[in-house]
Image (cartoon, rainbow, N blue to C red; front, side, top):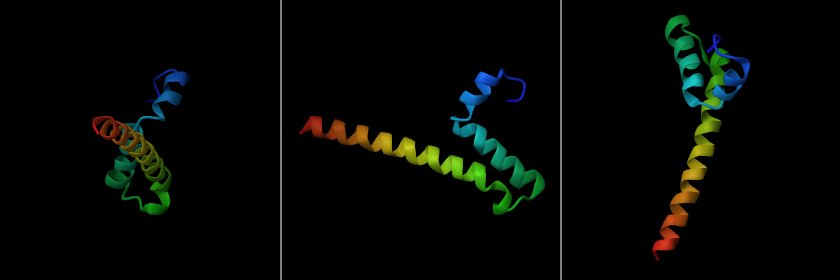
Length: 67
């Protein structure tokens, strides 16, 4: 990610894979604990919650149109 232009780096912060790779590398290579990896973990949780909420809203809308 560091080799990308700054604008693309900022956009990539919205991608869950960016945070997953950071989290995975910290745990697997450095044996980091929760006190070190809480930021990428929190980012993944927030992105997941937002995507889940959007999916649920879309699902409910689809189901309501069927009835």
